[in-house]
Length: 383
Image (cartoon, rainbow, N blue to C red; front, side, top):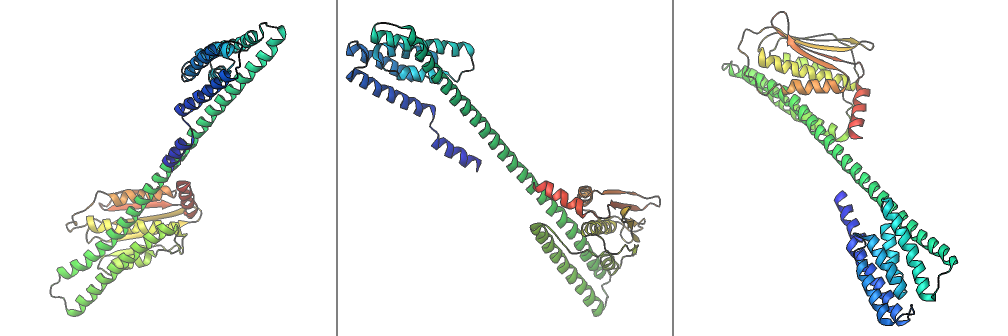
């Protein structure tokens, strides 16, 4: 959009070259009229030469406006054509140099007085006032137009810069949203794939399991895969719509791990939590159970949820030391990094470290109602 506006402005706004062509054309037309009428009591050859010389000088009005004004003043006196003088004064009036402005004022007054002297053969004292007023009017008009042009250019540049900055902020918000999608999908997939791996592993180490056991485990694997797809669809839908009113169920999450043969215990029940708080707590427990399986396979895991509206919510996932070899970990702690960022954005914190018994403890702290903080951050990112 910015590039389109610039291109349209270049097409609609005449450039210096076009203005020079128009100025020379006007002065040339005035020179022809001055010769035909004539506008001065001198021979037509003198009028024509003076007009043509001054007209040619007008082409350089941007580079040497004072010189153009001086040539125009002489041409005005000799030909009666005021075009080059007026254009020279107008072009130089935008200069911030005091010496140039003063020189233009002197040239303008002298040019108007000289024309009257050549035309009438005398120079009266009453001619000074009109010459001064005419010169001042041209210089003031030129200065006003130049100042307005400079101000308009400055405002346009500021508007374009603000639009470019807004575009950059929009791109940053989109990048942050993509990162959020990646973290959500990592959490869901890591958790569900780990559950599928657990069920499949149970069948692998029990090749003699009966048909009923195989059927039950296959159903669990299929159900877990369907849940993974459903959660992924929900994540994409939530990010498109901007909100989610569903309440994650920690008890169901723990039961799904226990059904896969893991020793998982849930302690504490705070009842329904605000949506943003419940969702963050759910993701922390999900990440903790997944990491416990990776690094302490078979070790008992305890999930604890405590808190109050006044003191906030604390969620801990603690696993004991495992006596079995850990599953070879994949990734580079991306889940914990994304989890810590999620909690930070809604006013919480995450701590992960070994405990005194040789196990591992993942702890997250949240305000009781993280929804207000979550909404504020989304509005800030979008605005």
